[in-house]
Length: 280
Image (tube, rainbow, N blue to C red; front, side, top):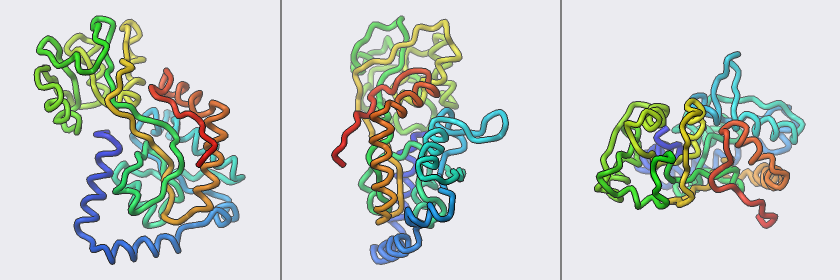
């Protein structure tokens, strides 16, 4: 559902907040609350507009028949079914997620939307839908058990040019060698080919690429650097819709639907699954 989804959107929000006065933002938020479709209006309209990233497989992307497919699409259709309406998937690039909610172009936003204080000034969040964990993806050739074990010149860390994590790792693991490549798929390919030893990133979004190299014995270390909690975004103050989604998400987590759907698309379980919590 990228450099990551969180960082690109945070940049857009910081830019928005730097050029708009507090009064102007307050006015936008008030207008948004008034314009956003309520739960009843969505049901009466018979459709729910769901923002999904068109270039984020297997979270969401156009499939062989030019129709959307992926984890977010299955979840979006599940939400629509629970509402008794049709899902209308709106292509929403990473940096467009919050602005589209503010402008009432979509009713909810998926696309690995990490909760943050900056975003919470402009939109509201449901309880978490899934996590994204910064951890280590490597192979059985490396016996390291902690991410800090890679702070050595005997290891080459692979990353995509321009990713925020490049500077993070240079600061935290200064002794490791670095190989920069052009795409996320290239990072996994470089490790499979032996040109690099490990990827340290939000590894959940990279695991699908490992299926292209079934002969490699991949390892994901349980020693996470941090875990982000990604929720469904809704318009500011749209509490009826948000509360409905919270109740539904509890059911989807309790029934293991979310975890089963994640494994269907990513090929293995979420590194740090969400535990259903009835108190929200």
